[in-house]
Length: 191
Image: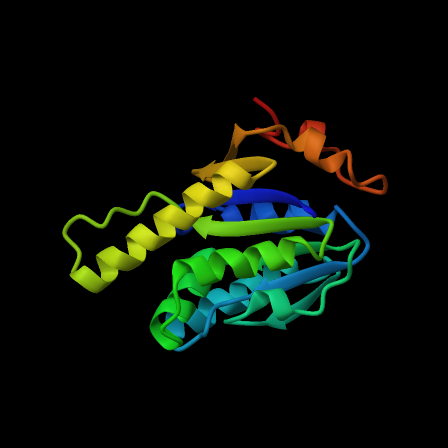
C-alpha cells in the first residue's frame, strides 16, 4: 500500500502546482491522472495551464475521468490524481455512481503505487445551493474527510502557501531513497 498525501485548497490556491512538484521528485516513474472532462472554454484553458506547469517533469499522463484504479501505473511509482472533485462529479453525474465507488477506486489505485498524491477542492459549503449541488458538495466534503483520516500527510494551500495540517512530509518522503527534493526546505513542510 502506497503512501497518501492529500493536497487541498480553494480554486486557484496553488494546490496543483505544489502537488506536481511533490510527485515529480518522489520516484523515477511518475504518472499524472487527469480526471477533468474539458467541456467549456474555461475547462480547456485550465487543462492547458496544467499541461504547461508539468511540462518537463517526466509525468506519463492518463486522461481518465472514471475508474482511476484501472490506470496502468507501476508498483514503485508516484501518482498524482488531479482532481478528486472532477472525478466525483464524473461518477455521480455521468455514470450515476456513488461517493463510495470513488472511495474504493482510490483505495485500489493507492494499493498499486508507492505514492499517491490526491488534489482536491476544499472549503465548499452546500448552504444556499440547489439539492443536487448540495448533495455533490456534501459527498465531496465527506470524501475529503475520509482521505484526510487515511492520509500520511495533508497539506492545505492558503494563498499559494502550503500549510501542513497532518503528518510530516519529511516522514512520507523517507520512503523514497532517490527523492531529489529537499523537503526540509519546502515551505510548510512540517508542523
